[in-house]
Length: 132
Length: 378
Picture 1: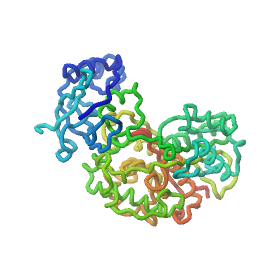
Picture 2: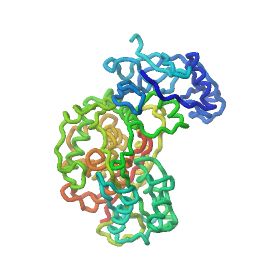
Picture 3: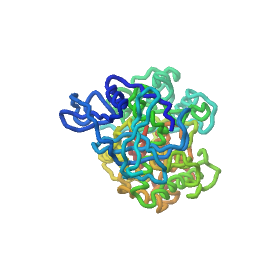
Picture 4: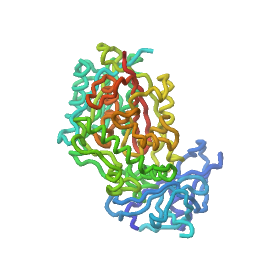
C-alpha cells in the first residue's frame, strides 16, 4: 500500500499527529458534555464547548461501510484498496483503510487498529478485521 | 403572500459543445428569457455559480446588466433549488422584479473533471480523508450504496433499475446524450467496470457540457404556461465523509418535510418526480428521504417498474443525469424539466395531466439538499 499524500497539520490537530509517532490513537473528548469527536476541532461539535482534552482510545471499532477503490484518484496511489468508515467503540466515525481482502469484508464487522508509517515519521491509523 | 412564478425555462447546448462557459450561459439565459417573452433589459436579479470566483457578478457584466439582487452560493448540484428559495424571498420583498437562475458548464469539452476531486489542502478533509485515497465524490456514494445493499434485499437490482428506467426516458428525449442508443439490462449495469465497489461506471452519471436557465417573477402574463412555486425547503449536512451517523438517512428528510409543509400537500399529490441522480444510489436514498417510500422501500418502488415511461410514478423524465445530461451541477436541469412537464411541452415523454412536480437537488457528498415543489396554474 502506498500513501503519497502527506497531511498538512495545524495547531488544533498537532497532538493527533504527534500521537501517531508513538502509535497512540488520540481523540478529543469534551469536558462539558463528555463526548468524543473526530476529526479534531477548536470546539466540541456536540455542544459547542471549548474545553477539550486528548484521550488515548481503544482502537476497537466496527465497519460502518466500505468500498473497494479500483482506480487511483491521483498519481502515487496503487488501486485496488479498501476505504472504510469505521465506527470507533468511543462513538466517532473515522475514514480509514482496511488491510484485508474485499471478499472477507462486510458491514458491521469488528476491526482493530494497526499503524501504517508515513515517510515523515508520522503514521496513519488503519484497521484490520478482528482475528483476520 | 405574493405568488412567484417560473415564466421561462430553457437549456443551452448540451453534450459536447466546444463552447466557453459564458457562451453557454448566454444561450441558456437568452433562450429562457425568450421563452418568457422578456429580454436581458428586464432582468434585475442573477443567481448562478461555476463561472469564476465572482460568478453572478461575472455573468451580470457579460450580459450588460446591473442587478439589484445576486446570489452565487456554492452548494454543488442543489445550488439552483436553493437559489429558488432566495429568489422567491427577494421577489416578495421587492428587492428585485425578475430573477434569472442559470448554470452552464463545458466540463466534457474542457476535460476539467478528475476522479480525486478538488483537494483543498487546508481543510480537515484533506488532513484526515485525502491521505487514504477515496475517489471524490464517488467513494462516499459507494459506501452509502454498500450500506444499502447490506440492509436491503434486492438492493443491487434496484440500483440497476434506476439506470435502466432513466435510459427508457432518455430514449424519448431527442436532446438526451443517450437518445438513439438502446435500452439497458441489469447485466449492462452490473457487468460494467467496477470503479468504487459496489458501483460500476454504469451507476455513475454522465460527464457532459450543458446547462440551463429559469426566469422567476411575480407577474404572470401567459396563464396557460404558468408554473407557481408553492414550496421549498433545504438542509445542509456534511463536508466530511464521517459526519453523518447513518448513511441511509440524508438531509432530504428535512428539506422535503419543509417543502411539503409550505406547499400544504403530501408526496401522494406529486405527479412528476425529478430527483438528482449523480449516482444510482442517490435516487433510492432521496426517494426514501422525501417520503415516497419507507427506509429500504425505494428498492421495491423501482423494481415494480412504475418509474418507467407509462408507469404510475414518473421519475426523472428527461433521462436524468444518468442518460440525458450531467454538466457537473445538474440541479438547474431538474427545474427546467419539471416546468416543461407541468406546461405539457414534453412530446413523447409527456406525463399526462401533471399538476404538481417536485425537483430535488443533492450536492457534494450527499451534503446539500434542496426541494422545490411546483404547481401548474390552471
